[in-house]
Each structure stands twice: as structure tokens, then as C-alpha cells.
Image 1 (cartoon, helix red, strand yellow):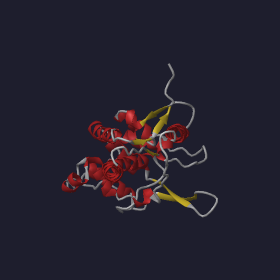
Image 2 (cartoon, one colour; image 1 turned 90 degrees about the vertical axis):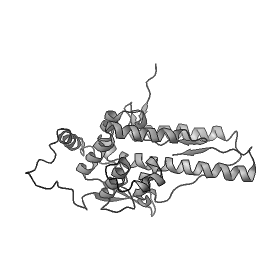
Image 3 (cartoon, one colour; image 1 turned 60 degrees about the vertical axis):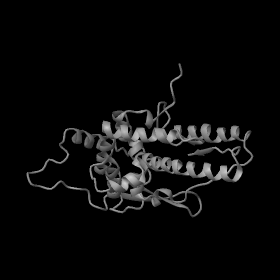
Image 4 (tube, one colour; image 1 turned 180 degrees about the vertical axis):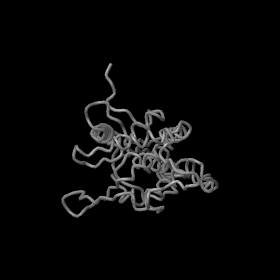
Length: 266
């Protein structure tokens, strides 16, 4: 029996997802020299959180927080011309605390259930959920393999049934994400708006955590880590849900019931 080359984060339980998100390659996908490793630091912080010894302070002392400018931005040339991209090294304590919070059993199950709803959207196929490599390849390499098979090869197959293909891209996506929209993505905009003052609710925790990672700003999330990739996919899944309802109605109204379409998103 052939072993799967990769495992989607959506196939993991909370403990497995926590372990995956705390790997070096999940913390940052920058191509740093091999002697850079954040694993020891991330694991040390995680153990202290588990043992509730991360903040051992005298009584009546306030719990410290990383300073607002604690995340470190790196601007890197995207191609050989004039395109640049900013990657962010998140403060390790903030990153690990965020991962621990979302991978608690009940929180993780709520997130997984939401992704199941997105998976059932008719005519939409998302192929870019973060994966863990089960081979010697890096996670990114397995993601590229998935892209080749599920986007490139699938597009060729679909060309037999469709006359037109439209290729689009979202410009400056991560830097333009409205963090409150992440709460909408998890439970819907109307419900999230009603519960915006319930600080302990998961959707508000996600929103608040991303704002803390971005100097308190509600526009933009850090680029270059699996945690941001994962929640960006959740937001896009919510967009898929909204788009599918409007698109199906418009196409049916204008072109009739025989009109068909297929969207592959990566």
C-alpha cells in the first residue's frame, strides 16, 4: 500500500496540528541558511506554556506582552524586476501562544467543522491547504506537487469540457486582509458582529491575535508562515461560499440552467 506523500492540516487532530505548526518550516518559509533553526526555541516556549511556567511572576504583577514592534519584517525581491514582498518573523512567544490557543480540542474542532462546510461548496475546489510532507521533500515542495497535479493537470482535463478559462490573482492579499473578516469567516458576519464583545469566543481570539501580531492594526496579517496561510484559506473559503451563491444565480439568470463552471483555487 502506497503511503500518502503529504497530509493536509485538515486531516490532523489538535495535537498533530500543534506539532505541525510549531515546526521550523511552519514558523517561517523563508529560505534561510541551514544553521538557522527556530525549533529549540519554539519547543522550549511550548513546554513552558504546557507547564504554565511561561510567565512565572510575583503576585500582583502584570503578565508581560511582547512590545508592539516585536515582529520583524524582511523585504525580499520577488522577481528580477521591481516586485518586492515583505515577510514577517513573528515574535516566537506570540506565535506559540496563538498556536496553542487554536489547537485546543474544542477550538480546533470548530475550525475543522467550518472547513468541512467550505469543502462541500459545489463547483469550487481549493488545492492550497497547508500540508505536511511525508517524504524527504520539504512541505513547500509537496505543495508545489499538489499544485501541478490539481491545478495544472486538472486544468488540462477540464479543457475537454469547457470553452473558456479565466485566470485571476488577488493583488497584495495578506497585507489587505481585514482581521475582523477572519471572525466572519469562522461563524458568519452577522453572528460575529453580534458577538464582537465576547472576548473569550474563538473568532474574537483569532481577530485579536492577528492584530497583536501586526502592531495592533486591523488591516493586514503577517506573510511567510503556515499559521497565516491557514487562516487566509479560511477567509478565502468564506469568500467561496459567498461567491458561489451569487455566481450561480447570475449565471442561471443570464445564461440558463445549462451554464456550468468550475473554479480551482490555489
